[in-house]
Amino acid sequence: MTLDPAAFAELARIGTATLSARLLKRGIRRHRIRGAAALFPDRRIAGPAFTLRFLPGREDLPLAESLVAPGGLIEAVETAPAGSVLVIETGGDRESGVVGDILADRLRLRGVVGAVSDGTMRDRVGLERVGFPVWCAGTVAPPATASLWCAGSGGPIAVGGTTVFPEDPIVADADGAIVVPRALAAEILVEAREQDAFERWVIEEVARGRPLPGLYPATPDSLAEHRARRG
Image (cartoon, rainbow, N blue to C red; front, side):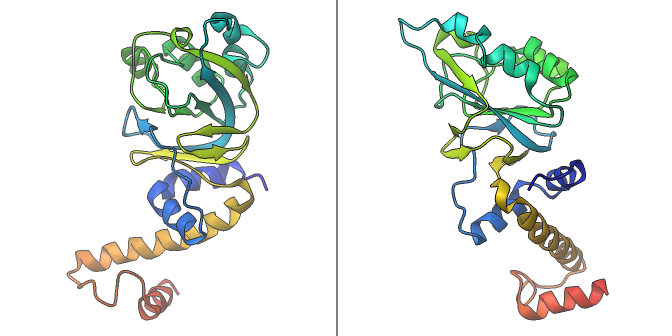
């Protein structure tokens, strides 16, 4: 099912740490997008994935032309829906930057909430000026055409050691970026909401000087006490 904007806002508020714990309890271990670190750590986002795929460039491939071809980078920037997260597969490439300040500003103005990639971006100062949230493996000077061929958008991708399908919820914050399988998203949100409320209560109890044994990690007694306190 597709989550509504309020649900995505709640996923962003709850954050990747709690959501990761819930996914692990479901047996979903490969949910972290490796290499995608917050370029600006004070940002947090959540939204459905809009996918874009780059493959290693080869001497006989038209690298520059691939950016403006149907389904290429420029079309992706112009068609990614408002509220979505642009998720970019590069195979972990570190030789070229797939998005710079001009494209980032266009994405921002179109309402895309952020970009996540296992590769690198470019124009770090410009990206900071634009204020577009980015998770990536760092920044470099060369453009995408230095080492990458754009293979198209809108399909499943392999990014940072996991698979992302279009519209899979993506959540990213200071701890990195994760993918939540779309079919499980509503259930994961309910479970994460409960865990988040419990842990906020635990934080209050610890601040009062309460010791951890019997309180955290959660026990049947501490969960029951928390529920009773909530009424």
